[in-house]
Amino acid sequence: MLKILLTVDVMLDLGKIQSIAESYSPQELFAALVWQRRFNEFDGEEVITDLSSHRNLWASFLFTKPIFAPDENGLSFGGMVIILSI
Image (cartoon, rainbow, N blue to C red; front, top):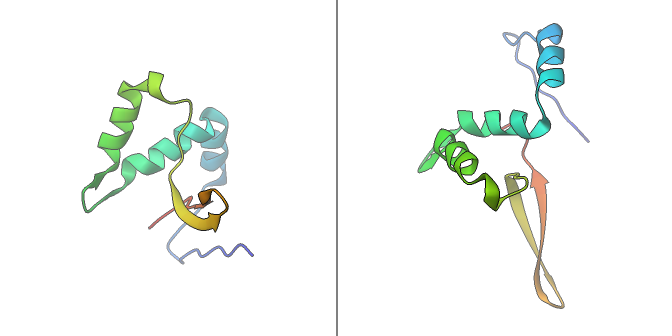
């Protein structure tokens, strides 16, 4: 089940959202979210700058919350995408 929490002081400008959604790829939108994040030793601007500088090393990127489960070959990886973190 998807739960959406909006505080009273948050106003959504649907025109702006539509314009942004139509102007940028999902990869660009996700990169913008990463760019804004900074905590502990994580610097989103530095991460996106490094990814951009080494474009030949990747086709796509996505930060996920890892979930490990045992399988017959060792560990399998699954993930849950954290789209927005506050």
